Length: 450
Ligand code: SF4
Image (cartoon, rainbow, N blue to C red; front, side, top):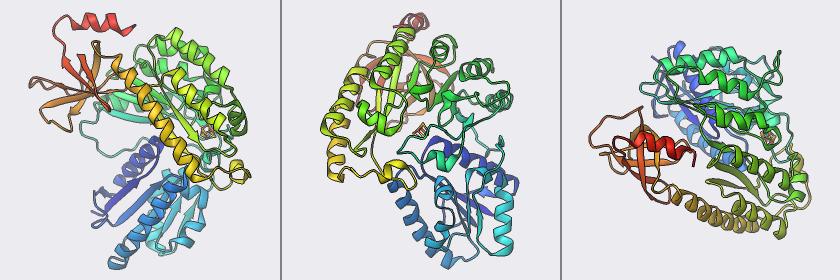
C-alpha cells in the first residue's frame, strides 16, 4: 500500500481539510504514515496568514528536496492558502514540488495525484469550483472531538487579511449536509463538535432559503450523542442578539465565544476596515455578559498594524483589561501580498511590534490568570478527553469554557464522560481539580449560571 505523509500548518480549517484529504486518499489505498522518510506522497497543507508561516513551508520544502533526490518516485504536493496565493510561483521557487492545489480542488485530490504520477509533469489546480461537502476522513479510533466546516470563504475585506484571496467568497454548506456529517461523527463516538467558518456567524445568508447560525445550532443540538457544540470564528460585525440568545438557550452550545477585536483603537479599526468601533464592540460584550452571565471570551489582536501609534496601542491594552478575556492571541502585523495594508506607507518597525507584543501578552496573561482564579472552588462539568501529559495516573478534560483541567480519576475509566470536578487550583496553563462526589451534579447546575 502506498504511504501518505501529511504536514498541516495554520488554522483549524486546514486541520479539517487535511483529514478530508487523508480520507479521500484512503479510498485510493493510501495509508497514513507519521514520517516523511517512508512516504510515497508528501502533502503540505499550508497557511498564508503570516510571512513566518510561509517561510516555514519553504524551509520544509528545502529539506524534502534532499529526500526526493534519494527516493525520486516520491511525490510532493502543496495545498491550502499558500497554493491559492502563490500558485505557479511555488513550483518556480521549489521545483521539487509536483503538485499545487487550492481548497476548491481538494475533492479531486486522488485524480490530481494520479495525474502527477502518470505524467511526471507539474500539476497546478487553483481555480474556483462549486462547493462540495467532503465527509471522507481517516479511521479515527476513539476520537472525541471533531471539526465540521460549515462555510468557506469571506467577503469582509479586512485590509490586512489574505483570506478573501485564498478562500474566495462566502459559501455555506446546507444544514442537511452538516447535520448528516455531525450524525456520522456522533455514531463514531465523537462527543464535541466545533463548527468552522472564516466568519462562521455569517453562516447561511447565501443559501436559498436563507438561514443563520442560530438555526443551525438548534439542529446540531438535536443530534444524539453530541455533548458540546463550539463554533469559530465569529466576527463582531455579524454578532446578532439572536445568536447571543442561542448561546444561552441551546443546551449543548458552550458558554464560550472567540470574538476577534484586532485593535482597541477606532482609528486603526477604521484602517483595518473591520466594520465596528470600540464602543460597538463593548456594547456587544455587555450584551453577551448580560444574556450569558459568566461567558468566557477570547480574542485575536494585531500589534504594529501600519500607522499604529503608541496611543492606539494603549487603547488595545485598555480593551484587554476592560473586557477581561480568558485568552488572548496576539499577532505582530505581517505584510501580506495583494492586501491593501501591505502598501500602506506608515509600516511599524519590527522592534516596536516586538515590544508591543510582549507588553500585551504580559497584560493578557495577568487578566487571564485572574479569570482562572475565579474558577477556584467551583464544581464544573468536565468532558474527559485523555490522561494528563505530566502524570499518566491523572485524567484530563476541558470545561465548557475550554480550560484544561487535570484531576485524579481514582482509577476510574472516564474517557468520553462528562463528570463534575471541583476546581482546586488555577495554574498558569491549566486548572487542577478533584472529582466531585455524589450530589455534585446539583452543585454543577447551581454554579453553571454563576
Ligand atoms: S473577517 Fe476574518 S477572514 Fe474575513 S477578511 Fe477579515 S480577518 Fe480575514
